[in-house]
Amino acid sequence: MIRVLLADDQPLVRAGLTGLLSTEADLEVVAAAADGQEAVHLVGELRPDVACLDIRMPVLDGIAATRQLTAMDPPVPVLILTTFDLDDYVFGALEAGAAGFLLKDADPEVIVSAVRRVAAGQGTLDQALTRRILAEFVRRRSLRPVTVQGTDGLLTAREVDILGLLAQGMSNEEIARELVVEISTVKSHVARMLPKLGVRSRLQAVVWAYQNEIVRVPEGS
Image (cartoon, rainbow, N blue to C red):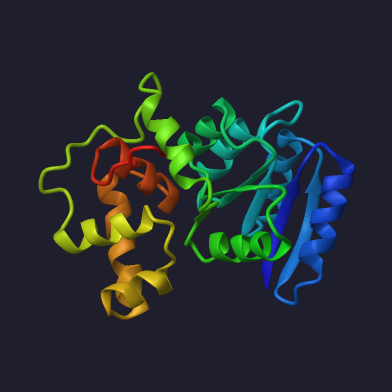
C-alpha cells in the first residue's frame, strides 16, 4: 500500500484528489493538509511514502515545504501538483528537490501513475512540458546550479546514455527496452549516478543534464 499525504489550500482540490486516489486499491490518503507547515508536521508524524504538494500555499509554501521534506532522514519524495506551468515557483521546486511535477489538470490516470512512479523512486515530469520548463530553467542563469561538479569523467558512457533517456521523460521500463537491458540494470545505474551528480532525484538529474549540456534543449522548444 502506498501511503500519500496531500497538501493544498483549496478544500475542493483536497477533496477531489482524495477521492481520486482513494479509488485505487494500492493507494491510501493518510492526511490532507491546508498549508505547507501543516504538511511538514503531518509528514513527521505519519511518514507517508509520497507527499503531493501545491506550490502556492499560505504559512509555508510548497517550495519551502519540499526543501524540508527532502531533507528528512530518510527523505520523503515530493510530487508537485500545480496550476502554473512556467513560473519562478516551479523552478524553485526543482531546486528544492521535488521528485515529480504535474499540472492539476492532467488526466486522472496520469496523476495516479505519477504518484506510483514517485513512490517507486522513478520521479515524473509532465512530458508535454519537459522541454519548455527545462529550457526556461537553463535560460535563467541567475538560479543556483543544482551541482557545480565538472562533467569530464564523472559518468560512464552507459550512465550518459541513461541520463539522456531520462531527459526524454522515459521510465525505467522504457529505458530498459531502448537499451535492451534488464530493468534492474537501469535501476542500478540510476542509483549509482545520482550521488555522482550530487542530486537527490531523477528530476534533478535531468535538470543537471540540461545545465551541464549533457543533453541540449532543441532549438524552437
